[in-house]
Amino acid sequence: MPTTTSTNSAALVMPDPADATNAAATQEIPDIRGLKDVIDIPTGNEWVLWLFVAAAALVVAGVAAWFVRRRLARRSEELAPPPPPPPHVVAWERLQRALGLIHEAEQFCTEVSQIIRVYLEERFNLHAPDRTTEEFLLELQSSQRLAGEHKQLLADFLGECDMVKFAKAEPPEQELRNLHEAASRLVGETQPSLREETVGEEEAPVER
Picture 1 (cartoon, rainbow, N blue to C red):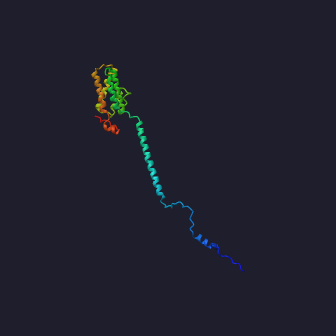
Picture 2: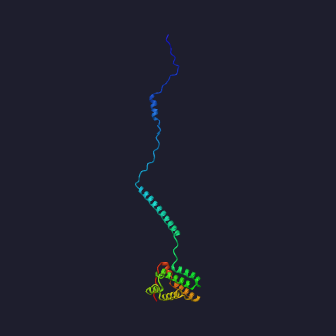
Picture 3: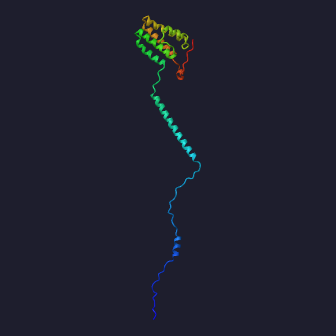
């Protein structure tokens, strides 16, 4: 009697290898590489930018140099000594102080005479302090720096001062004050004009 084989067990179905290969091929493979840096493409106009940068740097350097020079110049002005006073100002101040010697005739005349001599040398470049009255008046005759009336005023003034200094004259106080007024008049009438002080030039008075 033939043996009967039971076929009730479930059959094992194996997938087709070709189907697995096709399925894998259809899946999208992700790109694992990162993004590359952006590359600047030269346009050929970069020199314009550098030109602006260089110009700006020059402007900044110029402004800085100007401020530095201005600061140094102002600092130099602050540290520089003031200019000396003009001769007529010095003479005026010395003449005022000389009034304190009015009761000492010889000393007074010596001081006032020296003040005028120094003033004439500094104002007109006349070599008065180191010369005698005769030598100075002789040189003054050929000079055009003083007007005729001022030459005469100066000759009378120096002559009277010499009388007190060398002849030991004892004039009254009023005569000494007259000498002081003559000296003050000489300085006042021969001092630089406002235009001369502004421009820095000296003009000789016209001979009368």
